[in-house]
Amino acid sequence: MLPGLRFSFNNMIARAVDKIATRETHEQKAMVQRVHEAIAHLPPEQEHVRKHGELIIRLFNKLAAIAEQSYLDDETEALIREVFPTQADDWIDSDSILDIHKLSLSDTFKTVLKHTLKMGLSGERHEVAAALGADMLNIETLLIEKFLGFYNDKPSDIRNYLYISWSLWAYLVAKQKEVISAHNDKTLPFYGALPKDIRAITLNYTAFLQRQLGDATVYFHGGLSDYVRMDTRDLLPIENILECDPADFIRNIISPNVDVVHEDLQKQKHVIPALVPPLRLKPILSHRYIELWGVASDWVRASRHIVVVGYSFNNADEHFNDILRNHPDRNIDIVVPEATSDYFLSRMEKIFGTAANQYTKVTVNGHNALKAKKVRLIAATAEEIDISKLFGV
Image (cartoon, rainbow, N blue to C red):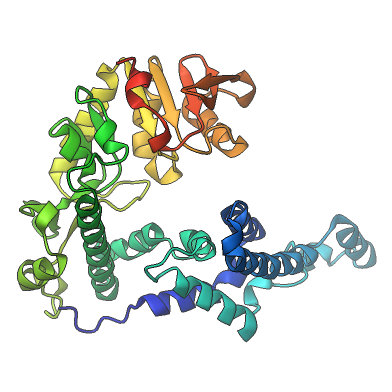
């Protein structure tokens, strides 16, 4: 379907590893912290995974130490200016005595990282691989990078986007069917316990929420049950998404509607899943999304009580953050495991303008929480909270 495709996930891993030395020190430290958290509470039977994490942490700490030691400190700069007073301004063009970005990692470091990241692409959960992959193999960052090909007329990026986005779509559709099949007539965790008389806005793509609430659901970033023809911006439905076979759909419907071989890019045909890339400036895949975002804003404006579950208030979602930011005069409960952390409190200050020292420690549904004015930050996972009780139902 995509002749000339040069992308592969193995190559993606290799490029990510090659770029690791160009990461800023604070980014490397953030990866170390993520691995720390991933192995902190592993059970004894996962001792090997914990050791794996310790190895990754040690390697990254050594890399960060090299970068930190290369910084041009004030004392060294003062000596340069003292010895070469007239030339110093021209000579000092960097805050480092070593260009860490031009260094290459040893084969030992590269091999360990590549092997770890490949473990994250397997079907089995590996905490250390997941922690590293969340940053180094961020599928959202990749989609953003390749989606720009539609704007700068870059055929290779367009082919890559088609491949990556439909791979993601197929994976999510398959996992969605797997979850529904595993539960049969049983209630789905979290989704199945939601009150029936609420409205919901979701940034997820799966159909679980719509199964529970029907049309009282807005898919802010699109969903699995639609796809878009890019030249006409038509939003096309996928029939019976819960029973859809991803391979058959791509083979029988998508492939005949894709043409990437025509020399004139304007005469090519591209259809992509209706999954809005997480850009700060949201691309308009279809006029339908303008309407949906307007509905989401209206629902928030009309609400008396808002419960936010499992949402990190990421910078890439500023469009949605703005909707909440512009309607702060209602009760808002935010449920997320890291809700009481310093990092999350700093995010909340940017959203609601409430300083960390204004929150008071309370408990909600037996969970630690912080409260300031009409906002409560509840440290819990989605399954651990009875949403009905939050709404007072």
